[in-house]
Length: 317
Ligand code: ZN
Image (tube, rainbow, N blue to C red):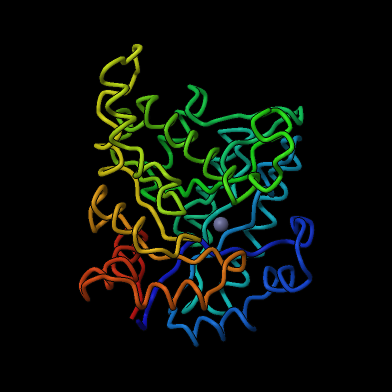
């Protein structure tokens, strides 16, 4: 399919490069070279780019987090200006301080033309052991601003501080993207939904990668158990209702028909969008899978292109 749009695609600053091969690092720092030539080869017209993980969310000191977010966003805006027909941007945010995060998101949307935020799940602050999730009351004013700015918030995974989680001890192959990413991001998304966030801000739109971080698969069971024993949950509605009203998912790193069809059944055709997760995943594999997935032409166009245009209000030919 030509004209595809992708929205979980990453770049890095030199200091946010994590472990990985020289080739991965080269790709994270490349914009106009092989990134564009692969987009051309595999039919991707437009990519919304975001900083890699954990980057800003792993910084303990607030001023350093603000400085890195601003520098990453300015750097991205400069790269976008060279190819604004091919690239858009999601803002990196210093979530260590909700007011400063609001300020930076507002600057990115109003001055840099970014189409939303991409935040690497929980934020550390002051102490390395900290996990700050954004369902707590001090973040409500931040969420009010996201709704007011009318842009989506991409909740991207990061590795939890697995040294604090005994279930991962001695099993490094289950950390990072194999299992720990979804373990963290799903819990964070569930906490946001269960906190009543979307009752307070009903127009807020969240994006989850990796076909919803396994939430669609378990949606019936989670709702069923909460209904049987609600334990004074603040949320007014079922998780299924929030997933169908306030959450979108992308196919990033999940190039397989059965979970795609399950997700379409649970969320409906309007809430699923194609993405790759480049350069951590291959554009060739992601695009070849999607172009041949069992979908009607209409479904393919919605997932591959028009859902993203509507959500991000893209002005594309
Ligand atoms: Zn990613």
